[in-house]
Image (cartoon, rainbow, N blue to C red; front, side):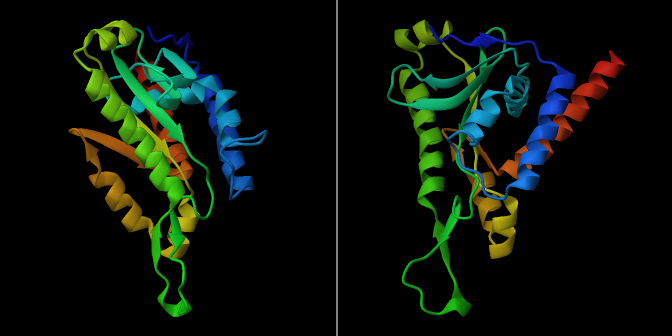
Length: 219
């Protein structure tokens, strides 16, 4: 059965961690995925931020999480998994790097700089394919004994989240609309596949935390 870590979501700690993310994105335009100062290490040290990403699944109250989770076997791995206490709702998270060519790259062999064209980068296609493979394996094993043994239920709700790149590079190249169109239109097996930049992740997370604080004050 899948093993996740329990963690009590702390609003004040999450607010502090969000400010640290804002500082990181302000100070560094390009950020590697791995390494001592990479994004994987940054998020691994901030469990409240990871739990907050669980709200990308409607109705999920995050209570459990874990980094580097292999789905069923070592075939496909998620950078982070967030789940509710009953392990019936999940968000599978994939982080890629935040660099100029993370999402798009200039087509090779161009001689006319005034007519620059771009294609989707290998990094983006790799991240997207990773999430699609999760959906494939989940659908492949659903309603089997192996699925129920792994999750403890014969059916779960889940969504995938790919975080990659920076807004500034998309805006400079005029590619933001192209990126958003593909992100908004990508549906796999009738399920949305969320793909956002790290800047959008910060913006959405700050809005979500503000909503959580308001709801808590009303209780």
